[in-house]
Length: 144
Length: 436
Image 1 (cartoon, rainbow over the protein chains, first blue to last red):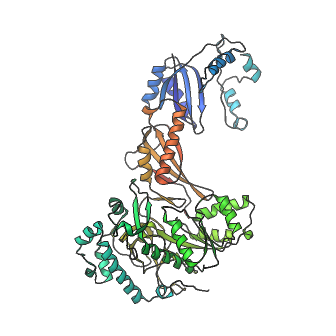
Image 2 (cartoon, one colour):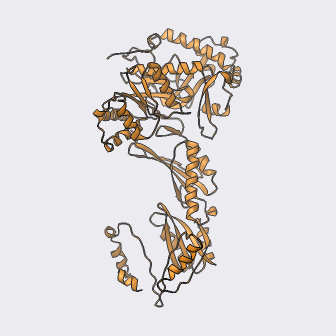
Image 3 (tube, each protein chain N blue to C red):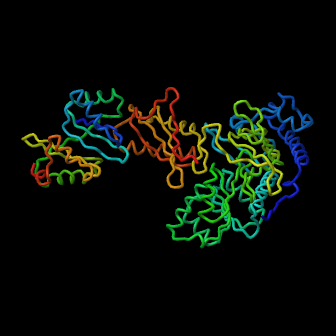
């Protein structure tokens, strides 16, 4: 069964940077992640290439984290398949606590979606562009 | 200014008659105290084995100070001097360590206490014809019932509404044309901010006076309340160990609170050495209650810092005046009128396995009210990785704190290592409220 690394993180500047720095130091490759927002704190949920190593790397630093079993389900990328899956779970009265989806393309483009506070005023888009990244317009995002 | 008295003879008694009344009651109290297990031991050690061993008020100095710890260690009946069949009321407060303290009252004790509170009310010029809305909490806390009995005795129309529910307070003030209220100063400021929301103007109310107490406040806060409502606000002082409210109260001149010295023999001491301080010097307030049959308490250290205001008051009362409380000798916090010890919070959070070793208590002022925030760290080894676990933990901390300190704080969960470490003298309390 697939393992997901869940990390308790406070909602304040620099926390994700600290976690990603430590994962980098342990040469962990992140395949997917999402954040479950709970107001003043959140849970960062990661799929990584080596969950045990990642867990130990963070736990050694005192992070509150845990490995969770997750159902990693391959869904053919066609309309209706998500509904087919959720219908099966619904009929069995199975409650989904949290879920996220990502699409991996053969040309190996990863997409990270970030929610930025005061996006317009913060100038985040310019900062990202200046750092050499391309910001995908919504049409581009759909076509990936 | 018109001066009214409830008991003119006692209130204006000269020094020698006041002292001889104190001595008579002090002797009686020693007799009662010797009937308790606690004082039989304690007074025996200093050679007081009967009321006849008391020759003068100076003999008071032989008696060791009593503290909150004495009350706790002798809970529940170590200071009870009567049979339970003669007890008509119990008031109790939560202690800092979870062990409560208790004060028992006989019928006569309640009667004496009510009479002192009646004295306070009349001292401010209130009386029959006044509608008194008592916004202080009723129950084990003495603030509500104490004023209630005194106001009824004077003949005011009492509305025992208790604390909270601001909209209802406002509606009640309007419906019954309340003339006198009793509340914490912060609550009165809060009510004022809601008046505008409720589209009620001050001149639709009939308010004339407010009794403000249960939390320290500055002269500026009093003036603000007086200006906002167009009323007179009188400072009130009391503590449950000395029955409750009615220990000291301001008269119409509002220049310090007259301590009813026929009932409470008052000393101001240096908290470090226990030595008596002269009038005008700030020290710890120490009281000997000489009007309570059921629970005698001698030389009780209140941990409140204040001074006796020297000189005579224009109102003609001879009882000396207590200044505002300028601070505490311990780390007690007063949150919207409720006494909270950081150690109570520590005890609760440290019992919960999912909480790490560090915590921080923060107090802020939001509008007119105090806000208590308790910050704890997650204990990493107990973390299972679920958001539901975190929500449940937050709820559990909140519920258990409410059960212990009676108010509901906001709880913040933090990552391990975020809060100051517990080794050494970590600062555990941050009080951000403006000091006035």
